[in-house]
Length: 162
Image (cartoon, rainbow, N blue to C red; front, side, top):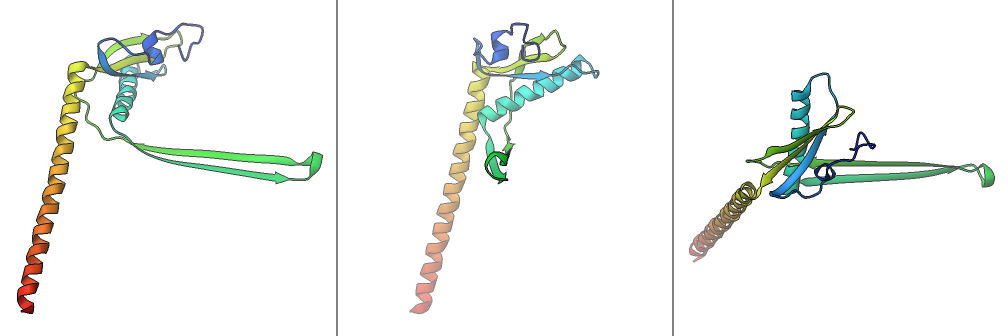
């Protein structure tokens, strides 16, 4: 297990595919004085975030690197500074996810497997497809309306110029 290397982890904790699940993700929570229910909520939320990111994510990334040297020859020192900032925004509705497996480590951490079976995953994909088609249809209708108004304005301008 990640927090207890002396104990072999089940395959699902290591992100191996799980039979019967179209998509799955593992979340974990460190041992907490707030109790097992709190840990389960935290681990489940982390897994659901991963699932949502698998479906749809916008990522912004910034990497900065800086190198500086001082001194000469044998007394030269090199200072390197690296920083990386990543911002991920996820907005996806997940209907039908549930906890399929849980595992406690000897150190008290909790691991949960959250997933979608084939039927639930198909429903989400179908909804996403309908939504994107509706968005495209709405954009097409706006384009057609603008085109119609532009043609009408052109005809009115032509009538006034005669």
